[in-house]
Length: 363
Image (cartoon, rainbow, N blue to C red; front, side):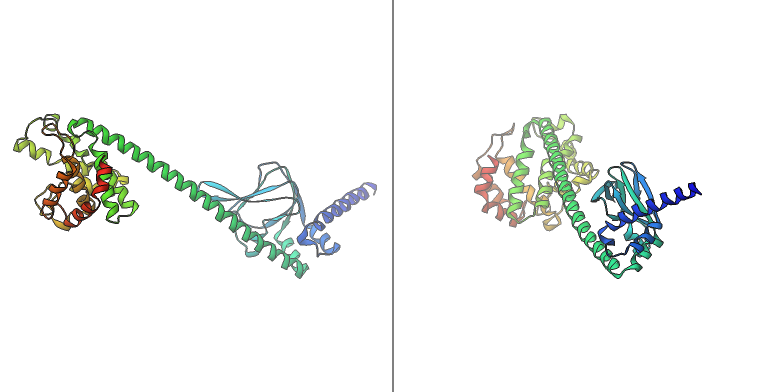
């Protein structure tokens, strides 16, 4: 009899302790001691070491927890990462939202420190709501507040992730472009007569394109195509590429294939797909007399039409083994003469209007 009395005394003491714990939870403040005692009888005391999952996202929601001691962190999966959305301390309810709609857990709750918590079943949750309309109202208000806080936190976190992604994308873009510049210089070194030509002509083309109203993305494609416009010359033998005199008809036919070879190379790189028209069509002519396909007028992609003017200007104003460079004004006169034959008249007109800036870009 004594041992049974001691056992009952321990139970009563434990119940009183749980009732005292529940009475300190703000959301349960309107419940009477007897209602709290009824809820306490349904509670199980649980201990969780730091880092232990208390609730796991995607699992069934059949209970909720009241944190008695320690702190928990609430996280939500975002792809391969976990996004912390809230931290809760003593007196906090966690896991109750899934019980409202009998849904799986929408987030993971993990013990951040050692945690002592009361586990209460769905039955206990429903009794808690039924015991007092004020409790039900307070729970709804608390959930509404948490949703607002969580939404704000997630929006801010997503915005930060987006900023980080944009920064990483920009860094990657700069890395790609630096690689393309290095590659273009290597290509120019192979063809000694055009050293530095690719970077210069790419910058000239962008100047013309900007004056035509191209957006940033189009200008980037134009610049990259300009850097790599002669990449197909990799397939041209050195005996032809570095020949000091005129090419024979057979050699010239080989040389004329380099735009097609260049386009094939770029076709394998998704990042450069939009720059490919510059590479493939920069030797076409407005009147259809160019190569490799003999396109004419607006059949020739706009970026290629812009590039042809810039390419010709740089070729005339640069030293070549077979002639010295000629003054910018001479290049402008030649381009004017070829308007409507080799070049798109509209682009020539724009080129003329920005000619003072072109001289500065060209150095």
